[in-house]
Length: 319
Image (cartoon, rainbow, N blue to C red):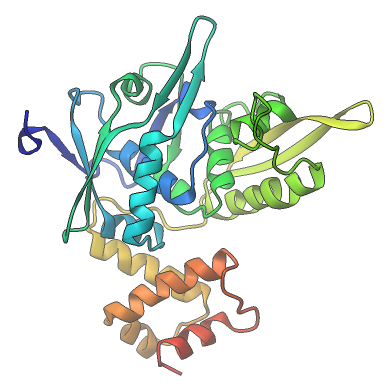
């Protein structure tokens, strides 16, 4: 079968819903794997277009511009190439009482040059975990995971959403938890990351908690438990909340969604003058600069503590 004759699924939303939920098998939620934020955004886009009636060999098409508009983040060509290359080689480790499965997510990734399109093919042994939705699955909103910039926040959001109907997670030993987040090698070959609990709290747990509570439909907290004098385990408390960000209106087109996200970002920056807003919305370069600025500001890559809105306006020549 040639590439041109493979069935293709294009990212599109179900018309009956104003937001889209990803459903992900719990075996994947608790599997051990490591991904960058860019890789996760690609995976979440892929998951959103999967359908259980899809045939083996279906090619899933993702448009880079639409991905950027949904996430508010700009990924350059090289970063995307690295991300899909890593997704092809990166391994999921899924274990039950009878089996240990080592499997990669993607069988192939094809870039269509000059069109900003990526075509993705799923590894067939992974398909059943992604598409079998009849039991034992986790659901979580697509706009929530796109709103999280920390890869650990994305990962902990997945885990927390598995327990949202119960109110708290099971208790994980710190070793189990760090292995799930690929902070610790179960074989002990690679060096352990954030070995001190204070570092784990500062760079992983508190960052994830703050981002999840601010940007998603969940509110979480965590408790570290001691065994003797040392911290030994962790559990999360999970409650539903009204999400702070606007839902992604999939029944609207990409242009309408881009305008909505731009208005939200401008409001957060304190830019409310209608003349300035119209100048920004009508200029593609200023609009793209807005998304890039907000991403860098929210992730700490750009410092503008006193007046971020003023700094943005100065950068785009409006002040």
